[in-house]
Image (cartoon, rainbow, N blue to C red; front, side):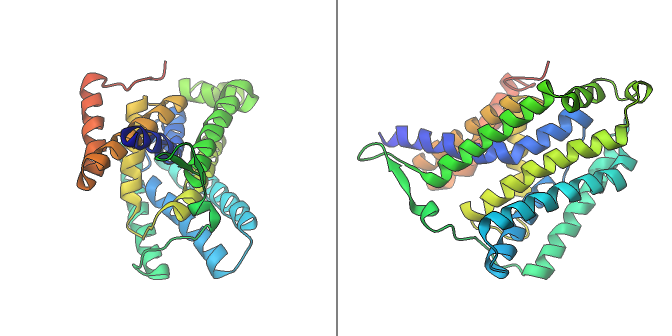
Length: 286
């Protein structure tokens, strides 16, 4: 039962990793764009949530809406004003630009919030659980995170495959050079894709704020988990990203059950093993 509990907790943890990774997968799927600052944006959303709720005493629902709107707006403007200028066949300029953004964000957060770790208290949500047996219980917070991951990825799938915007995003992903000939605006479409990705980043940052302690330098670790989940699931596959997050989460919790020091290492080893066996991931995009 101890091992069953470890696997169950790993599945729920995978929901958080899927939220970390979904925005990254979306940007890569549409623009073939690798955002090195992705983890730092997640941490920024977490700090915004702490500042609004703990600092300004806003109601959590109001704070959530403000954080999501701020991230979406910032994502759209950042892509439209800056990142569109470096997109092209060469992947190096976007990597260098977003690496610079990562350094700027980390230092800005350090100046504003100091190096002390932060966490947002969630009251009963942190401690409440559903008891399945004497040895197994499911926490409300992990269950909510997993449900949010399924809802977010399902919503993105609906947008991509059941809406005019989704058809435009898929057309731009397939052949960005022909879309302007059909009346489309690549700069605007890319900015919308980044806004959607930033919305997911905001959701991930909100859950990060209540799940664990974080500090200004926590972004690269979140980026690493996101990369591993995306690659395990298959580049460009949103549901694959969820499976990748679950695989990574289960590997970490089982590793922690063996020895507390093996938690992160176990996830990396499973990632490397799957990369050798399935270089394109479990569910590569067709």
